[in-house]
Length: 252
Image (cartoon, rainbow, N blue to C red; front, side):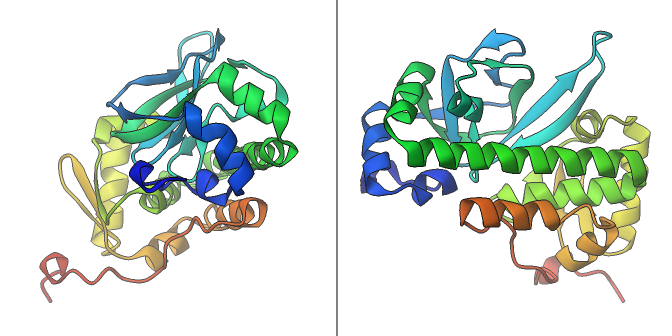
């Protein structure tokens, strides 16, 4: 990939040169704005988005309009991987949860490239497999774990895909993503903060202790991330440990 594109997407960086050359003429950099729809449920895909920064949520809805996040996509992935199996229609809504940028390609252009390259088709298929694993662990966690464990896992997943240790997110949005009531999120955030794992502000969360969050996640985190690395050959998890930020340290 040429330097002017400044590629940070893990899938694009993993591609061999011949596959990169298939995609390069069709990639364009686009801004991702908060709540922007990248895929509409039961509507044909117009584009695929290889995220460079920011975060997208994959949301499933019931006929009664109840919604829950079933997956997230950051710079490790792509919105539109179903094109690898010839499926142009997403059963889910995908929208921007955190602003950033992406390299966008037309659905028809990506399908053409996939048809010319077995290795590209295989990589996107493997990424789809990693999303399925992520969604499976989301289901297990939501069914069996307390909200504090679910929130700890979700914060770790966001941290893996964020640029720093702090990211902007509201309590209302976390409640939507975890399919719980807002007061429950507030209580869970206070518990994680009380243990020194995070710092919670009105519209911001700061990660302080990843190892503590992993323990709090009660087994819901690490295995999907390890499977991603096995399937794609690129790391996803950040290093663990306590974030060294003196201004965030608690008073003794």
